[in-house]
Every structure is written in C-alpha cells, then in structure tokens.
Amino acid sequence: MILDNKKRILWITQTAVFIALLIVLQAAIALLGTPLITGSIVNLLLITSVMTCGPFSGLTVAVVSPVVAKFLGIGPLWALIPFIAVGNIVLVLIWHFIGNLSLNGKEYPVYIIALIVAATAKFLVLYIGIVKIAVPVFLGLPEPQAMVISNMFSIPQLITALVGGALAVALFPRLKKALAGRKE
Image (cartoon, rainbow, N blue to C red):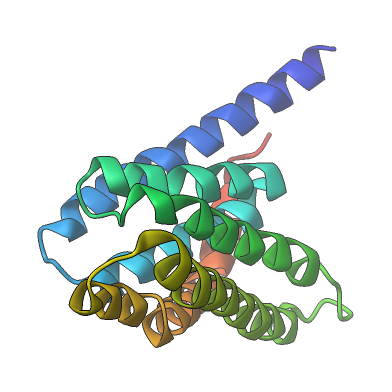
C-alpha cells in the first residue's frame, strides 16, 4: 500500500514536471514566433514523458498540450484541439508500444522504427482530421485562412514530429542514466 502511494506520488510529480516544462517552453518559444521549434519541443516532451514515465504520463501531457497552447495564445482554433490531442495520443501510444520492444538490448533500431512510425501516424491523423475533415467540413473559413491552417497541419507536422523524436532519442540515454543514478 505504501509502495503504491509512493509510485502514485512519483507519477504525479513526474507528469507535473513535464506539464510545467511544456508550459514554460511553449511560452518562451512563442516569443520567437516559429511553430517549427515549438512543435519540435512539444513532440520531444511528449515522447520523453512516455519513455521516462510511461503511457499514462505521456497521454496526460498529450491531451494537456494543445489546451495549454491555446491558453498561451499560440494554439489553433478551439475546434481543432480534439484533433491535435488525438494526434498527440497516437504519437504517444505508438512510442509506448514500439519503443518498449526489445531487440536483445539494442534500443536505437527500435527507437528509429518508433520515430518513423509514430511521426508518420501523427502526421496522417492531423492531416486527415484537420486538413481533409475539420477545415472543409466544420470550420467554414474564408479560403486564405483555410489555406493557412491546412498548410500548418500538413508537412510541418511530420517535420516537427521527426525532429522532436530525434531529439528524444538523442537525449533519452542521458536522461535514463541520470534518473537511474538518483533511484534508491
């Protein structure tokens, strides 16, 4: 019972740290005005949270991320937030299921596969959900605004997911080592 409480408190703390990092980094990067950097950092945090804390932490950060972005003034229309959350959820779940596979202690090939599959899946979810469904069917926006949103949720999403994933793969061994060194 005490161990369960310790694990629960650790999970809450770790997830809160990722959410705090998400808020601080999104707010700081928003000043630069570049969605490619913001998206890459968000994907880095999504993937790192699932790799270090597990799927429920990653899923929590995945759902909170677009809402936080909207409140910071850098997020999209409210109607698009569910699509973004689903894209983030797909990224996290694929990283969880593929990234935890074992190839006789060889992590990098698994991480590369997870990177490619998860980034592609998130891109497809966002592209189909937002560009092909939400923008033309639900939003009824003027053509210039519809084009801007459609462009934001096409290839740039694949790029930011790949960059964020590559950063996570590069940073995770050091983070894993640091976390192992502090455990009792």
